[in-house]
Structure formats: C-alpha cells, structure tokens
Length: 385
Ligand SMILES: NC(=O)c1ccc[n+]([C@@H]2O[C@H](COP(=O)([O-])OP(=O)(O)OC[C@H]3O[C@@H](n4cnc5c(N)ncnc54)[C@H](O)[C@@H]3O)[C@@H](O)[C@H]2O)c1
Image (cartoon, rainbow, N blue to C red; front, side, top):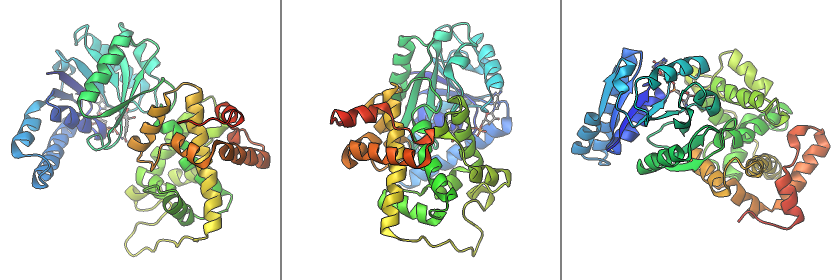
C-alpha cells in the first residue's frame, strides 16, 4: 500500500485525494486553509453518500475511503509519503517555496509531482536538490470522473520516476498518457482551435454563438458547443489558458486569443458562474435560436475540425506524444467524439491540407499554416492508422 500526500484541498486536490483513497492508498491532505480542509471532508462525505445511495459502492467501501484520508495543517504531516502531488494555486513562486520546504521533510525516495496546468515542469523541478524525483501529473476536473491523466516528465526527471509514477496512477484505474514538457501538454494545446477558431468565425460575423454551438454538436457530434463550454469553464479561466499557451509558444499566431473573450472576462461576464457570458443564464432568459443552414454548417465545421486536426498532427510532428496518446487524450480528457488523428484519416488528409491552404491563402496569416506532417502525408498518400 502506498502513502500519498496531497498539497491543496481545493477543486483538484480533494478530487485526487478521493481517487487515491478509493484505490486503497493512505492519503494525507495538507492545506494552509483549515476551512478548505473541513469543506473538502464534508463534500467527500456527500459524494460518497450519493454513491452508496446509487448502489455504486457499498457502505463499507465508503467508510474505507473516509478512513484512508487524514488531514494535516502542517507540511510535516507529509513525512513518510511515497508520492506527493501538489494542487495549490497556479503561482510559480508559491509552488517553488512549498517544494523546497517539502524536500526537507520527505524521504529521498519520495516522488514529488505537480498538477499544474500551465507551468513548465522543468522550472518546478529546478527548485529541488534532487530534480530527478520531480514530475508533472496532470488530472482533469472532476478528477474522480475524468479517466485521463497526463504524465509529464521534465528533462531532469529520471526514467524510474516516470515509470513508477505512471504505474501508480494506472493502478488507480486512470488512463495515462505520456507527454513532453511543453505548453498546454496535450489536451490544453490540441483543444485550442475548438474555442479559438469558433471565436474567430464569430468575430468575423459568419455565424452567431448559437449557430456555432449547433454546428459543433449536430454536425460534429461534440457533447457541448464551444460557447456553451466556454461559459461552463468560465471565460476568465478559458481566456487565461489560451493567453498562457500563446505567450509560452513565443507568441505563435496559431494560439492568438480573441478580443471578444478578453472583453467578456474584463466585464465579469464569465459564464454560468456569474449568470451571464455568451448566453444569459438568468431566469426567464431566452436562448438565441441557431441558424440551421446545413451548407453553412458543413463549411464552418470543416474549418474548425481541420484546425483541430492540424493541431493534433503538429503535436505528433513535434513528438509531444504518440499518435495513440494524442487521440486518447482528446477522447478521454475532453470527451471528443473521436480521436482527431482517426478523424483526419476519415475525412482525408488531402482534404485537411487543402482546407488549411485555402484558409492560409485567404487570410495570409501564420495561424493557418499547415503542419509539415500533414503535408508530407498528403504527398506520400499516407494515413495515421
Ligand atoms: N481547476 C481545474 O479545472 C484544474 C484542472 C487541472 C489542473 N489544475 C491545476 O491544479 C492546481 C490547483 O487548482 P484548483 O482549481 O484545485 O485550485 P483551488 O483554488 O480550488 O484550490 C487550491 C487550494 O490550495 C490551497 N493552498 C493555496 N496555497 C497553499 C499553500 N502554500 N500550501 C498549501 N495549500 C495551499 C488553498 O487553500 C486551496 O484550498 C493548479 O495548479 C491548477 O492549475 C486545475
């Protein structure tokens, strides 16, 4: 049995703690805020009660999960852990200071991991004396429900630490994918055009939000449309992820954020959590009707899906992850109806290249440059699968 430490009992920390405790690990959760610890405990009890009511687990399992979790208000409580996963505020300096202190508390063999979404794993590892023990372990929200976990070794991480970390997370029933330490890892990088290209089309006035949501759901088979999803995630959070990826990629035009979303964030129109974003969630508000034009739908869907495929192909071109891991990440991390590389084969590599080239010719923007991988595949008549 492994002893797992979790730093931070917010949205992610409490979810990861539940996952580890359900997999029979002893879990110690540390948070500087005692109220956060208390509320995470109450929320966990609520979740487990609901699972018992629904017959998903029995009372004995629920009790065992509760018993497996203990709380600490001092970092020293994490002594003796085999693996510590940090899930605190997304701030490099604060995370660094926590890791430095942690290293003097845990044993030399303890693996130290961060759940960061946007910081470089190399920069976090560099704060440790034993950098080879550090790794990125990126869960998705809500951690107990989302199958995917991205495993991100830094250039300093030892192969043994990568193998051991992957084995632990696999043993928790998760699906792990291995990713190079690059901005957005797989999911937050490859998914950018789902939001970005939809916003671009909206900004050009080619379709309204309801129409674009209808297109992506009806024609694309996505569970939620991009604007519904951005309102659900929160425009502030979604905007920040895009801006971070854009900056971290040395301002690559492909990831350029949208003023529409920036202004919504600045105005506090964050989506569901504030009652208004692209849509109005107040009582009695009516949702705009989509313009259900099949031909327009097909054209605009083609534009978004080819941009998504281009991003997935380029991630493969740059060896960010394997073909299978890129497809798994998008189907299991963000519930895409199909893996994007599978999708590319289905709609035709040549068709994707031609669509991107046509967009590039029209706009003369770097944003629409086709991945060299797609271009060479077209030339050689190759498929991803
Ligand atoms: N929320 C998501 O959807 C999501 C998804 C994947 C990854 N992440 C990443 O996970 C991390 C945590 O995000 P979150 O949404 O759970 O945050 P959150 O704000 O919900 O929770 C953070 C918790 O950390 C505690 N904390 C802050 N500073 C601390 C310190 N110095 N020591 C101990 N505890 C401290 C806070 O009291 C709070 O309870 C971030 O790095 C974020 O980028 C978030």
